[in-house]
Length: 187
Image (tube, rainbow, N blue to C red; front, side, top):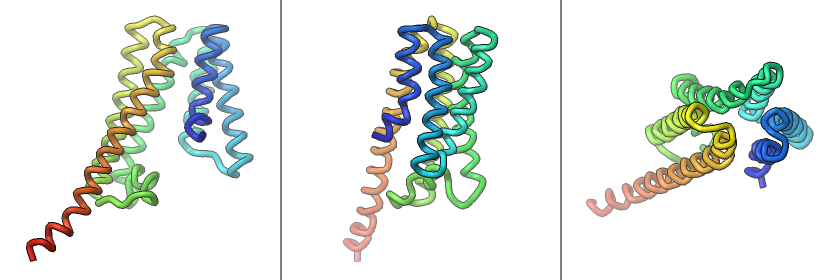
């Protein structure tokens, strides 16, 4: 349910684009994200920082798109958001005691610091790649293809990253469980 709520503004953008075009879709995503923030605030009495940053950037880039009637600004927004997230994940490696990946998932699983750093770098790479892929589609395909990529391509690539992450964690937690057994066998 939570993932549906997170992707609702993108779905609203997609549907509105199909029926009313880019500018209506841009206005719709700005409104949808504002409602999403209000809903989260009323429900939790706090707003997720990633959602807030994304909403601010949607409002800025979407507002510029509407003001200048040029879709390139809203098309750049996913790249800017992804690259900012990449910088935040990378910066968390050097600021504070734990990486952002560990802060987000550390209560659910236990990994060695080295593995957390590698997992965090995987997310950095993912966000950089998504930003680059977005620009590739923006400058090499038409607007409709970009809208489809924004919903299906970026969602698919993100889900692929999550699957890779699950496999990565599974491999490393299995290795950790095997180490004590192997060490006791040698005794």
